[in-house]
Every structure is written in C-alpha cells, then in structure tokens.
Length: 142
Length: 168
Image (tube, rainbow over the protein chains, first blue to last red):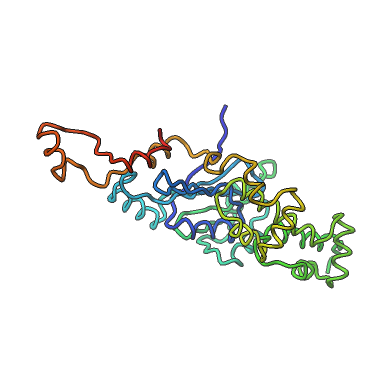
C-alpha cells in the first residue's frame, strides 16, 4: 500500500504563503531550499506540527520554459478565482481553532456550521486557495 | 464560575510557547497567559512540567532551529530570528550548549538540505532543463557555421552546460 506524503498547492508568492501557513496557521517549515542549478527553483514545504510525515508544497507558478506564459496566466487566473485546489484540514474543536485563526486575521468565507458529517468552515490563503477546516463527527455519535 | 485546576492555566502557557515560539514571546507573556504573577508562574510551571518556563521556551526554539538547519538552506541569522530569538550571539551560545556544536557545525553534520530535500523527479525534470535564451537557428549563427540544412544542434553554450548539472 502507499501513503500520502506531500501534496502541492500553487501560490502567488512563496514568501507571502510561507508567512501565512506558518505565522497565521501555525504550521512548521519542513523544507526550504533554493537550487541555483534549477534556475533558483525554491522547494518550500510546510506541515502541521503533529503530523511530521505529511507536508504541503507551496509551489510558485513558473514561467517559461517550465510553463509557457499562457498556461501560467491560466493557472494564476484559476487560483485567483479559487478553483486551483482545496486543502481539507480537520480539528478536534473547530470553534476554538476558528477563533484562534480569525484572531490572527485569517479570512474566513464560511463560519463554522453544522453539517451531516460534522462542523465545517472554510477560509482562503492569500493566493485564493480554498482551505476547509472541519470538526469531523464521530461516526458512533451519528 | 466553574473550578478550573491551576494546571490547566499552566498548560495554556505551555501551549502558547509551543504554538507561537516564533513570536518575540518572553516568560512574562507566558505568565500572563496563565493568569499568574511572574515569580509564582515560574515556580508553578516548574512544579507541573519539571523545568522552568524559560528553559521550555528556549528548547522549543532550539529544536525548531535545529530542524531548520537540517531542512533548509537559510542563514543562521535568519533561522535565529525566525524561531523568535533576538540575538544571534546568545542563540549560538545556547545552541552550542544544547547540541554540543555551533549551528554551522551542526548543519555540516547532515547532508546538504538541497540534497535531502527530496525534490521529486518530475520537478527536477521540469526545472533543471537547461534554459536556452536564444536559438542559434533564430539568429543566423547555425547557417553561418553549419549550413542551411542543420536542424537541431542543441544551442547550448558552455555556461548552460555548467548550470545543467542537477538534472543529469
């Protein structure tokens, strides 16, 4: 079998994303390496403190020759419109986490609300990526 | 108001150190989070967790700094500030006392972060491809050197070959 190790989101600006994911969300930097031989490509990953084997790559949208300008513009546009992907986070106490993140200036687009599967909320990162924050209902209690 | 065991307040201070170590937190801030006076807080924290709040906060920061030394190519100064410490001198001293070697020597004990970064093959393939600023076919150089029939000569100059090392 396999395990999920790393997943990627496009970001508008890596420094801005780094600030958001670490200082506002409280994630840890796992890797931050700039490789001169790869045109100063920056491999930047973050992850939650309690989950050392899972990370998110904060990937800058490249220009040519990695990605042609038209495609790069399309990705930027999709991202700005919130259609470039979603990260689903879970928490034991969505209200507490919501208050904490909101207090740090995180822009919520959905307040915590009861759903059949738990209490769900959503916010955006500075690039416009959608991040859901869910307190999943214990199936035994349903 | 319901009775709250005092250790619950101390845990709040410990959680604050764990979560916000990168901010310029001091023991005073932790004491405030526990709703205790500074002197009383330090004593109570030590009773509950077996070490002083100062030591707890510092070791939390040093643990993060060590991880950043291993996993990133950031400078020691940058790492010092990014874990909430204000002075590179005291950072180096505390780090050396804790890990037995100064930060730069500690970093040298591990493979370079760029080698250890596990940058996947697909990314290497995409980004390490040599970048050709101009195609010789486009500026007439090929025609002059090899005649009109030459199609693809790679167009790499010496500088490009050197910078193509990673993907090889």
